[in-house]
Length: 428
Image 1 (spheres, rainbow, N blue to C red):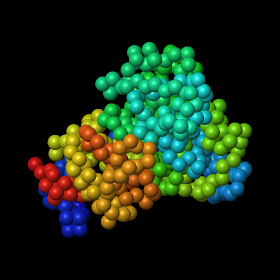
Image 2: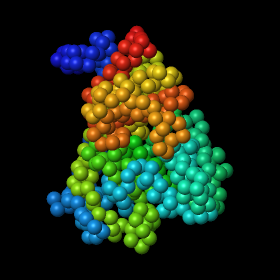
Image 3: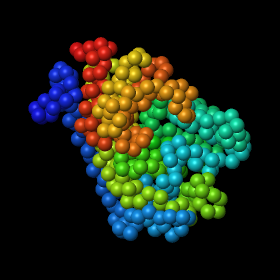
């Protein structure tokens, strides 16, 4: 860190010099890891440029459309480019998809029918999917007589024996959640997803393997479709939107499955033919263009976060030396007050709402209070620096995103400084 930068954050953010020195020491030890991250960024950047050039992206594709959205050549270009980037037969990329949960819900309702069964092989899905799957009287999958079961990971790995014993003639779809969600389980690497899909297809090649890809896009060189997934979905206000897309989601995979998903999003028989680009296609494509760089910045920030907290005696997931397959770092704080004050310290450097004090609240889709921090340009965008934490034991906070590594670094320093000021932790 340059001396002018040190002086600036000491003067304007009141960061203790000992904490700054610790951060410099941590950064010095991350040079090799940062170089590896940049190699993946470079590969993924070339992949996106190639897809845009191959599909002859033109300036007239970058506009929005109105009404029904018939003959929207820009929208068609977006979906061809996503198909090429993710190596899929087809894609559904729309601003009408409001979140990752919405994208996954479209897939599940689009494909499953009454009497079908589906199995999660990575344990309990993310909290906001619970009502989608088994909510009472909400129009959930359970209400449509679609049965759900789950297999927990075993020591952080897929439990192949239990999966084999759970799959039956009614099992139509298997859900694989790549990221950890609000749990301390590890995220799954692309090679682990490949092994898992290969095992499932070996039992029954007709089973649809669907991957919840949220937080995982462009973290590695390959994506789940490339290793056998039939369907893959995520949010544009996470990794693939590059911090620019203001809303939207994507679904990529086999053409017949994408068609079924489009019928669920819009109406049977209409599907992909409609749906206006209610935001300029330029924003979605420019976000995709920036995505590898932004994900790289977020990964660097995640490594820095993990190493800083490890050096202060906290348990972190994943550890610095472990391979990453998403942009999330879980910090096991084991104390409600430390958790809340961490979030409040992080909020102080949000580019938006830095003056706001985060409080735990009853967030829709969760069965416990949640505290969130970040101050993002796009509401809820977790590719921007943010932290979420359920207010329950073991009091873990999940830190994700960061459009700029320097913003992540400053955020972590301010969060730690807040804990020091509140006499909740001490520097070594």
